Length: 90
Image 1 (cartoon, one colour):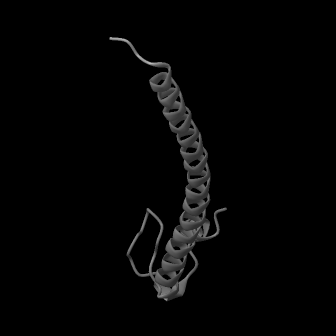
Image 2 (image 1 turned 180 degrees about the vertical axis):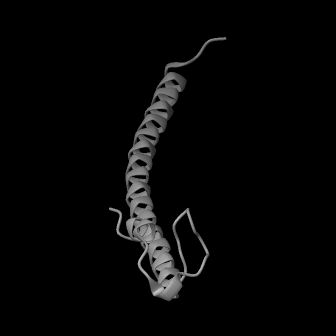
């Protein structure tokens, strides 16, 4: 089972190509992970904003959004400090 010098050179050349491709794919993968992280942060912030808008709409319609009285009508549209805390929480 003798391997000729030409075969060894071909194997080395093939190995070099595979290593270069692997390196390029790792770099691309890292860039895609970074981009995905940015997109997830943006979509998460949008989702929170959308949820807060929904709560604000329910509250403006005259209902409690706090855990103590959720879904109950606010009498005379009086302010509820628990609901306000939820709406204006940072």
